[in-house]
View (cartoon, rainbow, N blue to C red):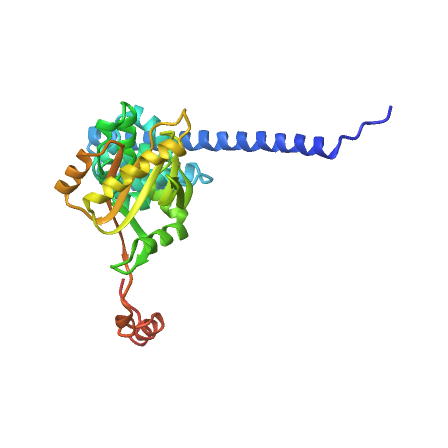
Length: 345
């Protein structure tokens, strides 16, 4: 009997299906191995810490353990003196196994080291751990979020959400916004205009989305709205996948003014009438400005009927042209350092 030869499309579909199954299994295996590794390290650190406390042993016992464990398990990496100290630090920082199992075991060992080294307060460390799991942050993104002080900025924008949104939508939206927003990936003149900031953010859209947070989908820049036959433009329009609503962002290069809230109120009403799907939640707005006076923001929000928040943003300052020639170039600095020999670290 002649063997049937599958069609190209059918064969390609089978191959793709098997490849996906293998990748999924590999990913699950990698996650399982990582969880076991973190739990193993915590268990080792917990035992060392307990024995030192009970037996009164000093720090040298860890060095002795490291040498012996390396001989017992020569193929296993991660049993260095430094790593054993980190294991002990992990166990002492997180004495509750339930917390270690979730979320810490869902993060890599290097994520956990970053949390130990860079975050001192337990509640702040746990917040970053949960956020890293929820948002799928790489270690580099976790470092960036810690160094930018995200814990102290998240949910801090001044808003009217409690009055204009139903619960729990109001709480979710509040936690969505932060103050200030950190746009240090931009380098702009101190007096940069709104369009310059807008152009720079779009040029660095991926970093902008990371700073906004998970769930934002970019819809458009200078998005057109036709209201009564007249053309209006939204600075930036996003859709938030978790909140299921449009998010209108207006950029202001200077200090917040009360009339900004009135204009955004108008935009949000128009977006709800012309863009919002019946199943969508009410659109929310965000005014980003260089500075604000809290009492002025409070009064401005009090008279609005649509959900919005006001926050500041920061960015790196570009050196004015007149000063550029007065500073040494990279080449000049290297030549100067080379002439003076090695520099002590």
